[in-house]
Length: 375
Image (tube, rainbow, N blue to C red):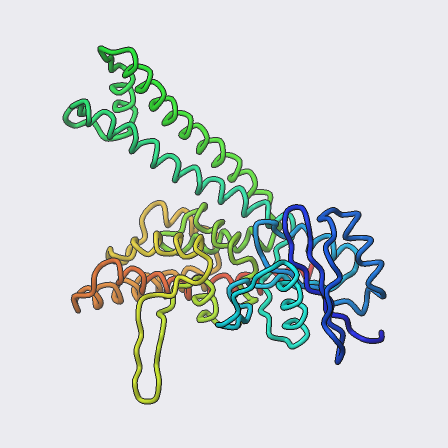
């Protein structure tokens, strides 16, 4: 194979700064190339034998397109977590050239942390679920704008009419105003609320179809996670989309750290000091887990909807879900009983819920893999 050549790539929308570090040799810059498939192909051909190349670049807005291009060419490539790249405190000069040199040097030294890279199909599932999440945020903003507009004009829904239900929207649509400019504003705000509602319905319909067409192993994990209280189809699909293969984490603590839901710590000697959660992880996974954790405020029970989701699942999955209900509800009660705020208690419950989700998903992945191998 010859000398291993470590290639650092500082990737931007239009250009890629390239640097190379050879084993036991110098680290040098190779300049800048266009960020196009043809330019990348020429760069790989220029750098020498494909088997001797070890490329890396930082995860960012350009996504994984370059990774997939290099993988198709046979080049080993790592996508690096940007926040975990070593940095000198006194270094105040940042250029594309210096960034590429640092990546090549650190990659050769083994000081970089690679992130998990999904395939194109998994990335597409993640994109559509994040699009729905963005639509829900837009819906909240649109509703706030309309409700505050009506409040400024002294208008309130009739007594007994639930906000944003059918009767509420009918009432809001029938409203008329004296000035033409106010009518135009009201119509625009109302149109935005209706538009976002239709957008969410369209995305959710598409997501249902996509989930039904998932590969067998991934579909089995989505179904199994729904045995947990507070984890319906969209939540389970979001967990799978954000985590990927749960078994890539050797224990649940690693998954909790990946979600950024573990407490930060600054301990030295005999002193142990812990603080709020780190929030240095996958924010989408952390949000969905904390939302689900609110279901464990209530006493353990299996209602109609949860019973329907658990039908046909293996006994060990439903047993784990029942154990989670007792454990997490008791955890919540004890924390609140010690005057811990509800938000902090729910964060702690969400952290343990992620551990139960890991146990369910890993067992399901192993069972599905065994079944496929036997077939």
